[in-house]
Image (cartoon, rainbow, N blue to C red; front, side, top):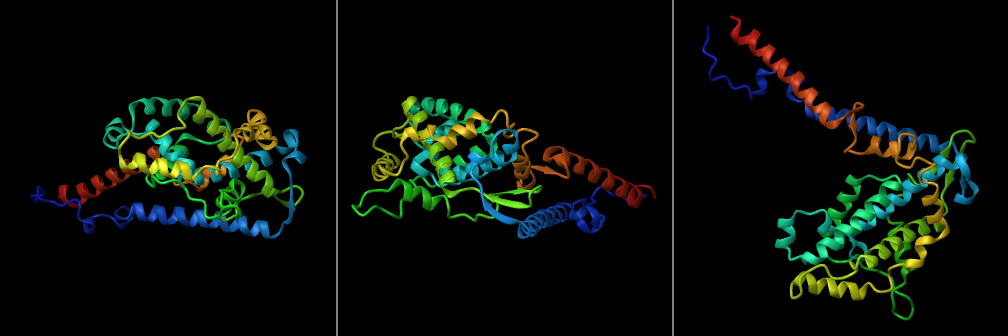
Length: 318
């Protein structure tokens, strides 16, 4: 029998090609599936008539899917703005999700960390109630805090002051609008959400969040006095005045509708078709219908068995 003690199992030339590139093959196939789904959506939309439809016209159970899709659109815009550190939101929320060692190193005030965690707790409850999930919220916070500086307003009013409506209108429409409509299969209509209602939903959410920061005494500089980050935060905070919506907007008619009907609409639940679309399109979702962890454990076991069988028959059983 040959001495196989020095056999290099990492040499892909010794392995069946079906296993040597399993990761790449899967991700290529997964990418193709996503591309096909998106192409199919675009093709379907091309055959539908467009119609601007208000939330008020989609009452009760008949409007469930419509409202859930609207919630998805608002969540998408909210996440986008948090990831840009609008109003310093990501920086102020980061102490609630970061490791203590990093907070100490970056000179976040210990007293502020406790306040941030209270805000985050209320925010997370609200977010899940609107159909979102914690993973996407945390990801937006972590991404936004790396920018440190506030999102800047490229437009000001004629008197040189910040214009909150222009600010939100600009930063809520810079992304593509391809998924911002609802397909009514029965009537053959692509229902488009009114821009005014989308703005009310986005502004209403940040107005609510502003109130939560104020209630918990967290609408303040999170850094220790004398640090560079503290200085920049103060500069941006003063420059940002006028960009934030009024707290009274948190109870506008659009916010009231999406919040009051969220339970009946099973927002984020098993029957929320818009949330299911998120899982299909997300890299953090499932693989072939299985949770990622389960899939990769299973794949590893299969690969290990295949390699073991190959090695046994090729080198040992001689």
